[in-house]
Image 1 (cartoon, rainbow, N blue to C red):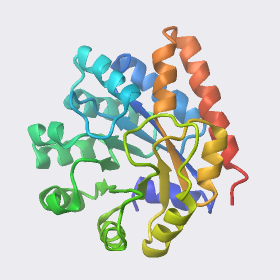
Image 2 (image 1 turned 90 degrees about the vertical axis):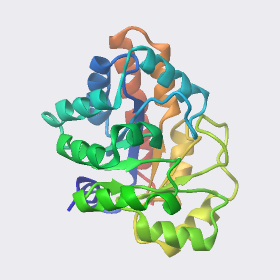
Image 3 (image 1 turned 45 degrees about the horizontal axis):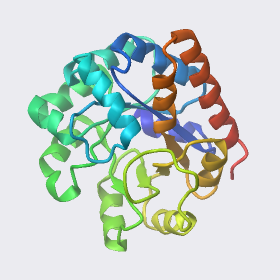
Image 4 (image 1 turned 60 degrees about the vertical axis):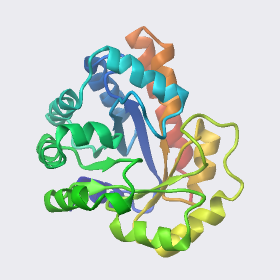
Length: 265
């Protein structure tokens, strides 16, 4: 059983909190510290973003964090080493979220082998659709690396079923059309769409994109199996240069989100 599946099983129906941050922002040493803070604050899974100069789905907040990380000469190889270092202290599920280009340059087979060896549990590649993922899926399935696909408000019933067949770990539901970022309100048809997806897939369905606080997290979790929060955390990292203050604010924010999910049913 994978760490991701094991984690969802251990929740016993409670809602999952997935937290995202960009590796190397402000630097890789801080990234290890941020991971630890997020874990201790109640996150169930952590997404580590791989910076890329021309991302597909990232909004301005995460794009800026990727720019800062790339200026620090962060590479995919260094991120895999970061995961290996984290694994000496943590068994929390780790998912890498990346554009496909860095993995293509690295070598698909080599990436899967090195990532799994380091302790990566899953990957999210927004710009690698199922129709073009056959080679990567072959390597990932062989090494038991969970490939997590995305669904969107525009996804057709046929698309939902196809993604449900191919995905491992969980389904990432993009709650709005567009890029990542904090929003003042969630999509009006969120519950309707998530309910449709859950009727067609066996995996947990988590809602991401646009969730910026406890109230939105609680609202999204009412109809889903959990939430994914990224931009709000990345914004906290950007706005606090002092590590102690940064970590305290991240801890307060993540623990507040986790608390808001406690009473969801």
